[in-house]
Image (cartoon, rainbow over all chains, first blue to last red; front, side, top):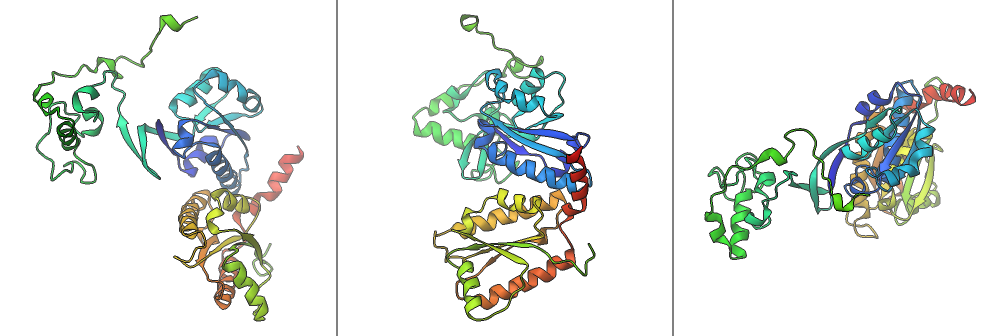
Length: 222
Length: 149
């Protein structure tokens, strides 16, 4: 899922201060699960913005609404009325959600209320970790399901680098060495010999290189 | 509103199993505490959401007191420890909004600690009187004007 963090209230106030009435729009999918932009967070952030605007002497009317998914036109329709009735939208969706709303409402200012951080998992309550860098050419099959592109600080496909101490990364002692994890995992599943293969230079052409990516499935188009 | 006439409104969220009983006991013991607190009984301080604190400040509370059981003594095992984390994060958030974090305070108080509860309420009233009214009240008039337009 996509993991995001809320921006600080003073930064949000700076963004919305020129408007008289705004809509804080939540998203019920990934950002709800990572406790950044769901219905509850919408309520807290809207309340915080009302307080911040009043303490700053510039009261702003802040309305709240949450839809199931901001990156899907079908669900965005459900917020049409609320969006129409407000001067601007502060979206608590991920970067994709914010842009989907902005594209759908070309004459309405749409602002991002969150910093979209990464694609990750819930490690334990309150802890999210990055697992996928969306490189567009998955190599997980060769490394026992542990991604060196994302989890090795040097993105090494032919590791380890030799700088790790015990099982920790030399870049940050809090981070485990991805290559130590890969080695242990490959040993456990009996595929250690796979690590002897030398991986050629990764083709980054499938990554962000050359602008944003599009996938077209002709078999599903109408 | 001049500071000399200012009587703060403090919302006290009191856990049913400890602080609420302590407030009751303070009555039985004939202990006096200022009428500035409005006590709200809660099943556990762990039940209190961040929104509750934010809404209370938004609606003009000058201070909020969260009173839960002693650490390790929660009826629901660790509700008061969750409350502690939420109160701490809310204190940071209200400070971002321009409200002093001293306006939100949590204490741990057993059902027998009536005197302690009274002392804390007295301290809190003094603290809030020093801070003055909730800063959002300064702009109340402006909001009303806007509403009538």
